[in-house]
Amino acid sequence: MSLRRKAAITGIGQSEVGRRLMRDPLDLTLDACLAAIEDAGLTREQIDGLSTYPGAMGPAGFSGAGISDVHDALRLPLRWFNGGPEHPGQLGSVVEACMAVACGMANHVLCFRSVWEATAQGKGRRQGLGVGGGAGGGGARMTGMMEYTIPFRAYSAANWIALYAQRHFHEFGTTREQLAWIALNARRNAALNPKAIYREPMTLEDYLAVRMISTPLCLYDCDVPVDGATAFIVSRAELGGDLRRTPLFVESVGTALKGRPSWDQFDDLTTMALRDAGRALWEDTQLTPADVDVAELYDGFSFITLAWLEALGFCGRGEGGSFIEGGERIGLAGELPLNTHGGQLSAGRLHGYGFLHEACVQLWNEAGERQVPGDPQVAVAAAGGGPLAGCLLLTAT
Amino acid sequence: MLPRVTDANSHFWRGGEHGRLQFLRCTPCGTWIHPTSPRCPACLSKELSVEAVSGRASVLTYTFNHQPWVPSPDHPYPIAIVEIEEQEGLRLMTNLVHVAGEDVAIGMAVQVVFEQHEDVWFPLFEPADPKLRRGVGR
Image 1 (cartoon, helix red, strand yellow):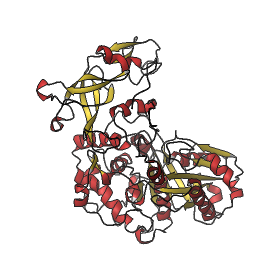
Image 2 (cartoon, chains in turn purple, red):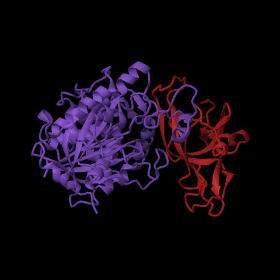
Image 3 (spheres, each protein chain N blue to C red):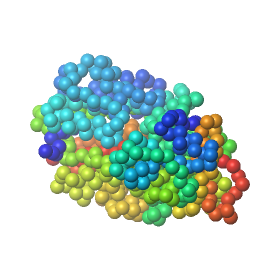
Image 4 (cartoon, each protein chain N blue to C red):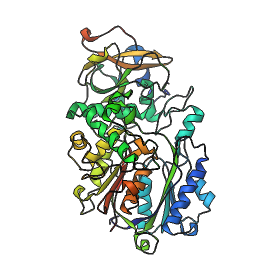
């Protein structure tokens, strides 16, 4: 039994993306969902599955809509649905859609993720605290994972990821000058993406001069909160041929997590859950990292991308710094074009779904000025940091 | 912001009242457990008891937080993950105190000190080497 090529992405959609759009998050979500349905050449009556991460939950801005919101707004005749925070990363919700179509639970699953963090932070003065768990506020007492981080004023994922980055720097000699290339490459690509938030050029000197957030991570190592929604149609592979677009087959997925599911208790502090998910991506395919034409790897913080590069086998453990140094290899014309839309660092924090969206755009050769040359056929999209991790390998043939 | 103290975790958060850093420990196999759990993750036994460790640890990694997530007079302050001497993998996220920023390093030997906040005692860590200790508070 295998998931290999049993599901395909047949449509994509994305709302307006921006800082402080001050729009109803469900309105943004529906824009993306309807765009994806239309892109696939389907009607809403044909959507019989619905999947999302993280579902309706706080803190404000973290989730723009839940399953019930979209289900009811579009009056979908669902046979299967799924929404919640406990997936293998944000893209785990797409993997589960693949599983649903592969085993006949649905024909066409609409997957969505929406955020309105920029507006929430502007309105409510929320400062991005406690991402992923809901730190609460006021006099609330911490429970769960927050119980062991917040009392020590490790308020943000920036702190938790910084601890991993520092350990990587220590064990492997990785430097800020190397890590910078995740941010510099993203900005270089964002300049070619009209929807990106930050498009003005950034130099290594700019990177090294900007203020620290949590050593060794500076401001440019942190992604930019935005409002926006992204959606996909995941179809049963055998139905893909009848639709508007060339189906993008899901060749394999990575959802493994063998270490402890924790930000601070994971066994190897130079990597994260993505170590296991990345390795697992290659267990059910003949393809290898050398076959990948474009890589869209989560950069909620720059170090996470470096860790994904190692986890997916594009370079050896500890070699991420030298792999990206200078930025040539990961540029649009390099051997592994990376985060071609500008990533979350420069294009905006669409929380994982933006990477899969860009992988599809590239495989359909619709990326305009930032299109990877040579008609790319194989792409990896990966999302998640800390205990969250999931990835997909897509092929256009 | 403080942890919610329950019957399951009070040994950890209130052990500092008597100067003890305490964890659950499996009686049959001796494994130290953190965070708390109803069963030993190594042998699945339910026979667990609260025991104190020495308080000695080493710094596995650290970061200096510069961002004023919450207003505070002491930015940047060091956050660390330390490994407790008694068992590989027995770890805490914590703050380093009584230390000069330039002396903080991975591998540094540290020891627990407690800081009371209302009804809980935070386990924080200072350099084990008295020569590296500084008198500054958190």
